[in-house]
Image 1 (cartoon, rainbow, N blue to C red):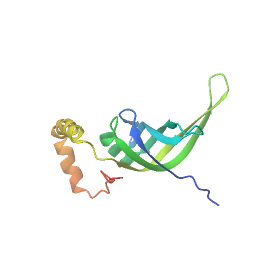
Image 2 (image 1 turned 60 degrees about the vertical axis):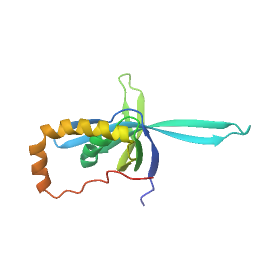
Image 3 (image 1 turned 135 degrees about the vertical axis):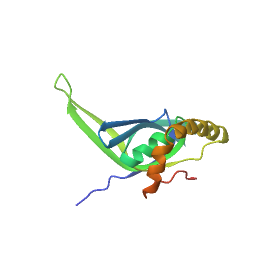
Length: 149
């Protein structure tokens, strides 16, 4: 019987995402997101609790993430938790828990952010027009670019 391992996180990116290709044809995108929780404690004082989560996306989702995930941008991640375990150099057990993204939605950028992103994208587009033309002929499923939450 499968057990449930699913989560939804909404927050902001702490830094720009890093896209890597650890093996030929396999892409991985890493980023950290901050999630705030607001509540009142027993003394009726407002408390802001911030949590930070490492997120990994793979393959086509990773490519999209590498283009869109910039510091400060609002993001919603649907995914699952994963734990890696290993022995360090001294033989002690170590582990790391992170989120594996299965779906990512990006909040719309503010006008000034959109203008800056368009300028950066224009520079990239000029150098990769031929590559994009060949990619357009193939029908590919592209993740949702923008979502309003």
